[in-house]
Image 1 (cartoon, rainbow, N blue to C red):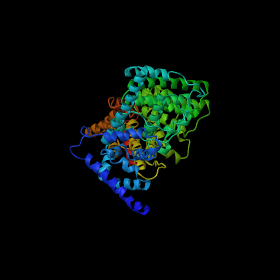
Image 2: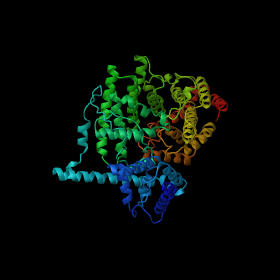
Image 3: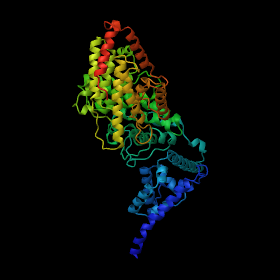
Image 4: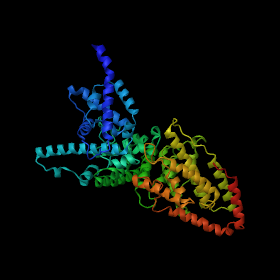
Length: 596
């Protein structure tokens, strides 16, 4: 008898595959649209995935739900649409793991299956159905509650004022008020805008991280869910080197880091959540104030550890950059703590990624400032960036998209552009910097694949953009100069090839390089294409003006600087004997500079 059963088992895969193909064919019919489909079975499946059956006799049902949930996590939300005809779940329940893998392998060979799981509209549709399921469950619970206690359903819903009562309290220094919940291992976020979530930067990438002890109420748990599962993974291509996740242990014992984390998460949820924007806006402001106050206490009283202060500073700088409307650089105050650590506390770990991130934001923001503005602000030295071996200094940092040596080069270019030096020294120093940038070999530890290719292309884009920035800012070259035009052609091709959507699109996308390319283009058509690209990124994603430069400003400050340099060319007799001498030296420099 058992032999007959074993021989019949392959038919289970065939029958399940046939049912899945039928569902794919049904979904692919020209007349099929979201308004004409019956989602009864899909909603039932999603409801079961959210709240699996708990009775002992439904053991197989729980296993099937767990299998489909993991399948959706790995292949995408569109998997749930295979249940559109009600033929998937009960077949999966009766299959073992080997048969299920066989089924999935067969489906991956189907072009329609790939079209389903990679179609943003499918993911959006499933997320909308999931939100509908959640609202139905919530409404049913509130109706029952109203019937039991005699309250109306309207009075049961809370607003921003109720949110204030839950978070308007300071944490104790020893974290004693934080509740430790053994069940709070990993739960998916509740309600996001599916259009933004799956077409832009923020995507659902669940991470198995134990964050017990970091939250003290349900709203903080939701903020942490969003931070871990949606915000942090989108910040870098390197999942194993994500600084936004490595600071989580620090948040357990640092009030400033914890509150800064909640503030960053709330500022994004205000944009991406389907509802409660006012509530998240209040939470964003409240936690930001609490974090800034706690960080100020740590720095003034000397109680906070250096690494926790830097982690809080990184989050507050991130929050300040993505939420300011104008390039006022109010967040730059937090970067000054690095100088304080070097002077008062005998230095800090120069490999600290939070410190690198803060310096990165400041360095790129200063490229949009005029010489007078930079000289009016006194920032410390960035020599600590190179306090490591030569090879290590060229390793690509995941959250920056370039190496620390490349960051140091951009900072040196800006300082050289504002320095009061002779023309000969300016040209010779610029030539040395260009040689060093051209010969730089940036690398990373990632295994071969698409992620590594994108990371290396991003780093190369920074090299090309830095060389163009050097020619324009230091030597006053115009977009029509042959050297600038040659470098710009390579940079334009590279920037346009980098993805701006999909799983390989992260916050490490080189916006600064795209902006430099748009500003120094000698062709109006390319300029418009690049600005449209920047505008598309900006409108689809919160936090993608990470260089404090927006399309509306069109880089007015850097343009002003280029105009200054252009006019200084006309008055070059004040810097050298004649304009001819200066041009001769520039031509000599251009001819000897190495072009990639």
